[in-house]
Length: 163
Image 1: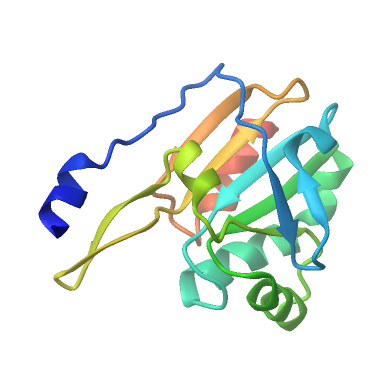
Image 2: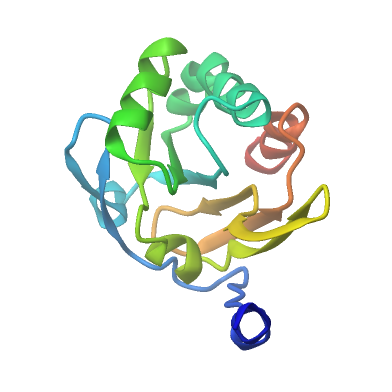
């Protein structure tokens, strides 16, 4: 049965220039957030595997530490994982994150963006989010895609694109 699941899994791959799939998800404050709410702003939409894990913390804190530079350029940061609102709230408070963390508990949005995929860690195969970032322009079109990013170096890659 597991073999069939892996074999039948079809990956969606978005491309630069595609319209970013809209969504409505709850954030860490239990408020409904839509991507379309940010029309007219550039968005850094990043998908990460799990709250309060080493790589995800490094990535979130690098966004936090650079949020003023990003906001000065009219850029909003939005993080998405499959964690729930309580987990996001704790993670956000613990690290003083000043941007939205959205709950994709049913994995619908991670699948729509093509970042929920088969992973292999220490011989264990499972489905999960591959750390990925989409830069979305003011009109809702995908401007740049980063797959399998390195948390420590990623903010510099983003600045190279947006500067």
